[in-house]
Length: 141
Image 1: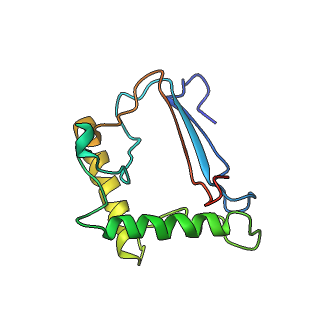
Image 2: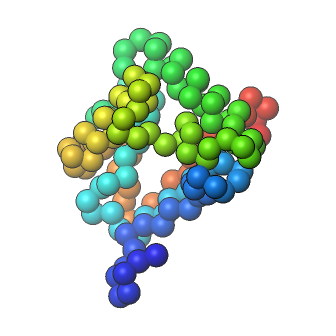
């Protein structure tokens, strides 16, 4: 909901709420305007071979990022159909996050926001763009 008379900068659709079920495993954002950036992707895989390596990433060096992403991904998928699980668990990173990798993801996201559009490369939301991301189960579902 927006202030009366205000125009939305973007529309973000998902079921990210502590009490909604099934728990979030997909999101869609449509950008009507996003001049200040503000939407960042700190978990982009650094694919230097594509010629568009992220300006910042939480992956770190070596295979540690790959292992952490896989563990986080599994936690999200294993709990998405579990109604007794807190909907924010594993899907939200708070300021007091104790897990080192998730904490680094939050800090990277904050740095990307502070750094402006150049720190958010190569995925910088632009007017008219739409992004969808989803966690898949091993079965492809």
